[in-house]
Length: 176
Image (cartoon, rainbow, N blue to C red):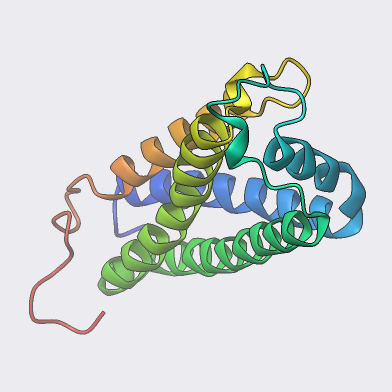
């Protein structure tokens, strides 16, 4: 019997959805390294932008630095996936034991913030603006990043809504 209510069920399913997504992204980047490696290289090199002299000084042309950035992205994705998979398991456990809601929410928050930082600050902010990815017709990941930021942000909000089982920040004074 579910003792926690509908919102923890929603949080479990939504966190699991983002966990599945970021796990598949990380897996794809590890097993098909070359495809998105080219994406990162082109974005950082700014070789398909408008070639404005006022911006081109930002370009990173070293393939070693480009590849290091890509490996960093994959490591971040993998860590976010692991945290979100653990959070999904914690949410599922909290459906039967509401005292675990606080721990599930905390783990989910960390994983979702990792996704938001990667796709919001990393792809939208740094890639989109600093490296002018928005100017590229061929190597522009802003729409995909915006969808992911929207999904992860929505899930973060849902996981922090108060439910009948526990307030948004979990029970006070108890073990979590």
